[in-house]
Length: 180
Image (cartoon, rainbow, N blue to C red):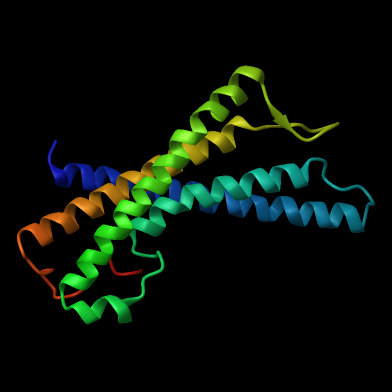
């Protein structure tokens, strides 16, 4: 497969996860409002709201992580790296890609056993009337971390090739994607 096809596939997957996170956050808002109304007006909260919210926050964070990397939304201190000329931002991108790949690779690798355990044992969060399965959150962590890792690998390869070829970015800007 060509790099362009992989980039397009990655972009579509990242936007699909972004849409899923937005939909989940939207639904979560309704759940919290229903819980507050039920608690204050009817003295009957929506059961399982704390468990659902806590699991959903983890899912949302990891569904959005790949978009943050792909869109250039990660923290970037341009003042320091621009002191090195056009190579500064490229070196910064390469170093952050290496560190991001290691970090998110370790998260994905370390999440495998807990995911398998959650599925095989039927692990749930919460007590009583509503028990929330743990495996969807663990799967979201694995998928999100894996996709973030792949995005960092792609950015690192591009930055490494730019340094190897001694080729500044085409637009003279940093090799980090511009934030949207």
